[in-house]
Length: 445
Ligand SMILES: NC(=O)C1=CN([C@@H]2O[C@H](COP(=O)(O)OP(=O)(O)OC[C@H]3O[C@@H](n4cnc5c(N)ncnc54)[C@H](O)[C@@H]3O)[C@@H](O)[C@H]2O)C=CC1
Ligand SMILES: O=C(O)[C@H]1O[C@H](OP(=O)(O)OP(=O)(O)OC[C@H]2O[C@@H](n3ccc(=O)[nH]c3=O)[C@H](O)[C@@H]2O)[C@H](O)[C@@H](O)[C@@H]1O
Image (cartoon, rainbow, N blue to C red; front, top):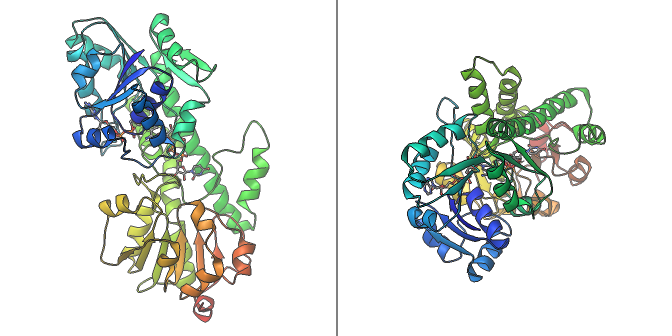
């Protein structure tokens, strides 16, 4: 099939590469000409493991191309995948201007029947509104199906080739069948439903996963007070197949371009029909508070943070990505700077993106974990990059002023750190030695 993919963010780029690998002819379109010139050289503007090899292989095979000419891409294609952004408005509601504009451009470009597959995450009812919008412009028949995307950043390629399920929302079974045929070699689990239910499945899935995270974070906070270990609690819970192990890692909460945006949008979707989504509002509140747990732990040890030097390990919202959209690290670094601390920050790939969004004279940008730890009173680990787990603890201790490590992602074990002479605090796990200001000051490295 000949496919035009509109938008080369994570979803557009990974879908385009995947469908070309499945021997379709794909043209990816972006209105950002600089992105297109980077992509046309076989370079990838985002850090996503495995994506560059996939893109280059399919470009070389002549199945994948990039352009900023939407009209010609749509004209050459039978199907169009819409994968542009749907960011939040200040109210939390999804901003649909970008997708509506893209739909208008597709409608104006049409030269015959097109199947439009919408992968962007859109509020319930949006696909029907897009249908009316395209119909008001297009001179040719078309159909819109909702095909929500469930990939995760950092494992986007694997998730796309091995999806848990494909959801297709369609008004007509013939349109659903064309979309299903395109995905059939990826999985047998293709769930076809109506458009509104498909739109809701996407929001409900993200909201449910966010709920699991806030739930386990609250359990972690209670574990700290009652002397239980949340990693053991989550493991023990997860053996119940009705609960499962996934998304029960306690930490500093969720971030990224989707959970924060989509939970807010679902609260608004409910609010628009006079329903107060109380549970999800609490999930969001818990997540906001959880980000500051590492700051509270530092203050419990040091009291005031003014003049203290804090190393921050990890700026991306999760490992294996350079995405810093709504990363917990931003709130935490801003809080530390606001409290008068000097910050020494590092991240294996996300530092330039983070620094573009926030800089301050009291932040030193460092090459790696040990450089960030130089002369620090404490290390705060915010992203569980595997490289951080491999740091030599004796070298680390020697380079720090005080051997304090606050582990916001439970990457290390208390035994390991305390054996190496650290005052160690993690999320929801008992510390053998909680540490106080005096101990930290008495215990220079
Ligand atoms: N990032 C992720 O991991 C996932 C995102 N989603 C959803 O997918 C959608 C896209 O998200 P991302 O891939 O992160 O996108 P993004 O926001 O990073 O990129 C979208 C791209 O679309 C381009 N664009 C906008 N209007 C255009 C137009 N009229 N013509 C051509 N190009 C245009 C922009 O220049 C931009 O490069 C959102 O609705 C998001 O919620 C869903 C699942 C996973
Ligand atoms: O709609 C989207 O964009 C995507 O949002 C998430 O994917 P993503 O945000 O890329 O990454 P996740 O692995 O879900 O992690 C999200 C956040 O939750 C945090 N998290 C995750 C799992 C966990 O147990 N604990 C936890 O704190 C991560 O650190 C990260 O900050 C969903 O997992 C995808 O299915 C969905 O397609």
